[in-house]
Amino acid sequence: MKQLEDHEAFETSSLIGHSARVYALYYKDGLLCTGSDDLSAKLWDVSTGQCVYGIQTHTCAAVKFDEQKLVTGSFDNTVACWEWSSGARTQHFRGHTGAVFSVDYNDELDILVSGSADFTVKVWALSAGTCLNTLTGHTEWVTKVVLQKCKVKSLLHSPGDYILLSADKYEIKIWPIGREINCKCLKTLSVSEDRSICLQPRLHFDGKYIVCSSALGLYQWDFASYDILRVIKTPEIANLALLGFGDVFALLFDNRYLYIMDLRTESLISRWPLPEYRKSKRGSSFLAGEASWLNGLDGHNDTGLVFATSMPDHSIHLVLWKEHG
Image 1 (tube, rainbow, N blue to C red):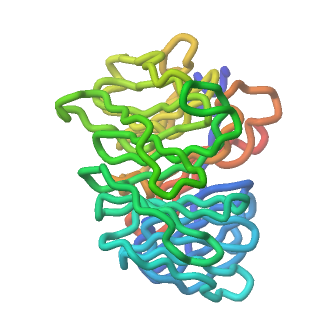
Image 2 (tube, rainbow, N blue to C red):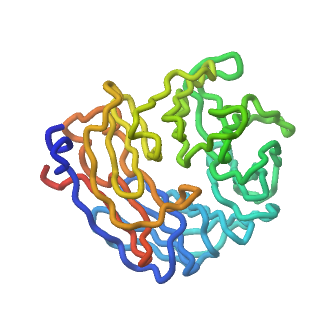
């Protein structure tokens, strides 16, 4: 805590290898995936800075991966699935009529979801590549889709149910993901009825709470009731975007600094300078790394990646916990 308060807890490094701008980032278990306009995606080991895989793709607006495969949403209006080991495209999902800005998938359900500039969300059979459903109702670009297991009981769902969230710049929509094809939107959340206030990209949903930042502050909804649990309205927070949210800390940032808020006191306890980077409107070109420390520092979880963003020179700027803090 003292190192955080003295702004001395972090260090930085860079990943260099792309030859055009990087639009899409995804982090998981010490690995960072980058999707670039140079028509390639790379998988990096954050601890060593080594590029583990590099494969030829289409233009990437969104990426998500696991050990075997990479899923990419593209500015060419399609989604594709690739095998890391061979670089082969194993599936191509065609049907959107605008750029695909967000993808998520679940192997257990064999489902892929995609959000697009055509204002729709599509649900696909992951292995077969067929479109199962098109969800309409958004009136803006769908910039985020999240497929997540519900952890609370409510009138509309039980723990263990899979839930789909989709967001545009004004609204968050909640959908059931079940067997029914014609699924209806369960609920629409927004911070202003008259659309005067935009939601900032990143949407946080952990199965219990939905959190999103806006010019009015940081909004936290209870997923069991859909009620607003709390709005954090500190003077500094108006222009901050949300990166991560836990039981104890939230990670936020603006154009100049990374900030850590202690949620118990709602005060900013630390900041870290950021270089001049590209903050994409959709939130695809920056992300938070390891998340467990947001639920409280335990003496072991202050390691690894804190934050990554793509830079104008096509490199990736990393903020890491100091190795021997």
